[in-house]
Length: 61
Image 1 (cartoon, rainbow, N blue to C red):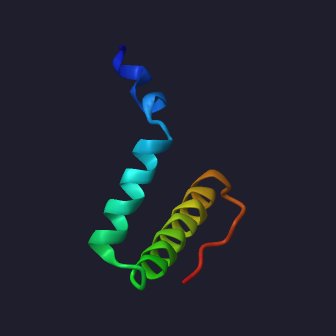
Image 2 (cartoon, rainbow, N blue to C red; image 1 turned 90 degrees about the vertical axis):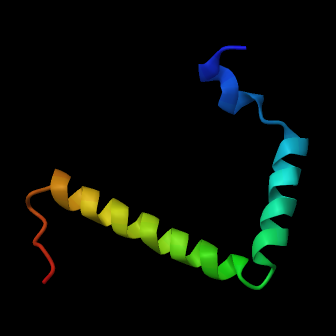
């Protein structure tokens, strides 16, 4: 198996196992809060990368 093909080798059982481990580690109540934080971080990253690409956008103070 080639190293660059490794991400494609993840099957449904491996995904289910990862989900179960995450639920056991963080609990059901903490997961939505973690996902909300991850989503806002991704949104901020996209906004920052757009500002770098498009000089016409005015910077927010």
